[in-house]
Length: 89
Image (tube, rainbow, N blue to C red; front, side, top):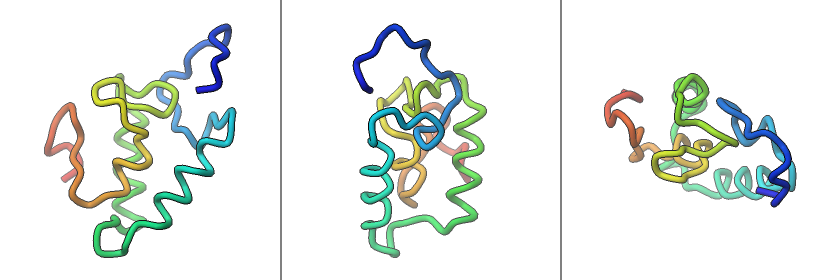
């Protein structure tokens, strides 16, 4: 993220919890720009993020399996968990 590899990686942290360089602001702006027809409602989004937060593949706000920012992936209705596709259903 910020190139400071002396810091330990944050296991099971969302980007919103560790924003070191303003990246989360950009991610949040992107999520806000999504059309309502493709964005999850707030309850579903929160439920998806809770699942991600408990996942062993979450590191520094990113999914170690696919490399996405989980906040972005979770915001889109058509997206699935890359580990277990039906996990978010």
